[in-house]
Structures are given as structure tokens and as C-alpha cells.
Length: 258
Picture 1 (tube, rainbow, N blue to C red):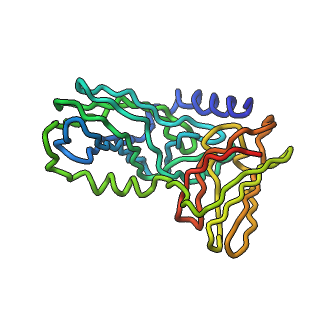
Picture 2: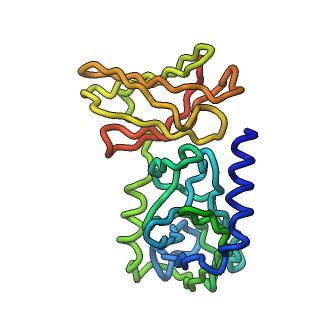
């Protein structure tokens, strides 16, 4: 934790001298439909277009960093759900391993639609990093009308593409469990197919060592990942995060650790 705080402080303090050199990160709102049906739910995407070579962070940024945050200004009767995070990538740097996004990512929010439409504004803060980390902020706005039926779904392809990158619930036939010893958490899963590769992204900080190798063993139908516990982590009650299987299929994991 001390190393995390030090690295984060160094990243943030370094931005003072280079803030003028910060590249522009474009942010925009993408509504799934417009108008949206009154009293229903609709999805709104927050699209980040990140400068080449730079990255922003996942909900757990890893060894350093800060995830994007949003404050919504909504029409009367509208409410916003929690951010939904697509599966991140593993970002290796001299300070350790972070989890985040390069190039472009769309974070999703489920909105309860009110009786009337209006402007939706997302007031955003995020950290964009390359050789240095630069705090940025901005607002993105869109107008959505509320009506009896939805008519224009021009944003749906973008929303569908983002939803495809969200981790799914493991299929019912899967058997997933986690067992710990003083130094490791063994994540066991049985997908019924041969697993060629797997990676685990922890949803919470200070559970596993992000930079430690995740050793996998497998059979024709089951696999195990050995995850090194973070320094100071003793008994872990639950293991939460995203399990990426064969580089393509991502699953949300939330299991008790025995």
C-alpha cells in the first residue's frame, strides 16, 4: 500500500510541470436510443477516445492510477446506475502492472427514463498516463427525448459493441471455487473445454500481487490459476474480478475463498 501511494503521488505530482503538454482525450455520450420510452430503462455510453500511446484506467487501476469518475446532471425523474466496465488489458510499466484501456473504450450506464426528456450531462474526471500521468476533466452532454416508443437507435451499434466486452456470468455447468494458503489463492474453474491461457483481473486492490506471474495448470476440461497474495493480505474472504479465458471470453467471478 505504501508503494501504491508513493507511485500515485509521484504520478500526480509530475503532472504539474507537464500539464500543458497533455494530449486531448475526447469524451462523448452515446445514447442507445432517442427518444427513450418513459418509465423504461435505456443505456448511455461514455466514450473515451484516448491519444495513441496513452491509457486510462479500469475500476481497479492496479499498482497505480485512478479510474474515471462521473457526476451526472439529469432531467427530473431520471436516475443513473453504476458504471459498467468492459474487460481491461494488462499494462506493464516500471512501477508494476496496471489495468486499463488504450485507444478507445465506452463505459456503460443504465438509465431509468423519466416522464420527460432533456439534457444529460456527465461531468468527468480521469487520469491519462504514458511516461507521466496527467489528471484531466471535462463534460459530455447529449439530449434524449422521452416518448411512448423509441424511434432512433443510431447509437445502438456502439452500445452493443461495448456490451460485448463486458464480462459475462459463467455458464451454469461451470464449477468455480477458490482455495487459499498463506501465500496464494488457487482459482479453480471447470469450463468443460481445454483452456490454453487464462488471466485474472482483481476487482479490488491489495488482494493479489498484480505483477506476479499467474501460473496456470489445466486438463482437457478444467484449469487452475495460482494467484500470489498481495503483501499484507492474510485471509481473503471473497475473490472478485474478471477471468479472461483463451484471450477472448471474459467472465465475472465472485466466489467465497476457502
